[in-house]
Amino acid sequence: MGEVPGEYCPGGYSVNAREAVKLAGIGQRIIAGGSHMGGVIVVADARRIRDVLVPVYEALELAWEPATAGAVQDEVDGSTPDPWTAVRDALLAEYGREYELVEAELDPETIALAHQLAAEHRQG
Image (cartoon, rainbow, N blue to C red; front, side, top):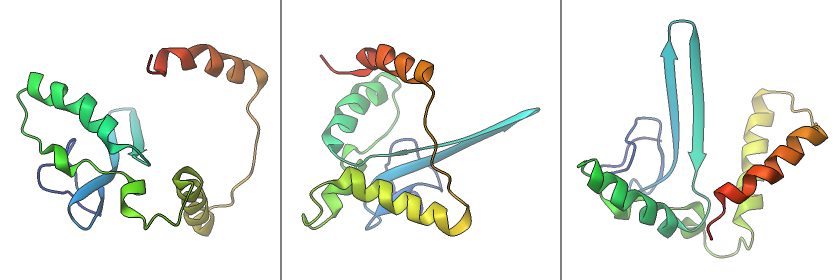
């Protein structure tokens, strides 16, 4: 845990590897009447994060070192063919230590909306 010097969206709750690359970030905001906490984990293809953030940080005239943007897949030894499943399983195991996890299904309307909106988030 902890900020990597030169990372994007710097914060004390960043998850890093080797104190050199940011793999995940946790953000929180508290205002009168509400709070929000969210996180982002970069599982694979750190290049895509860098490709997006380079022009953003340049336009905002913010200092940032692109080499600090990493991905979990870059940090494993290659014996994990599916990093997505490995990350999911690790998160579920960790949450399961503290909370009772109950499997549930999304309703058909939510699934339909997700399919409708997915096209907006795919690279063409």
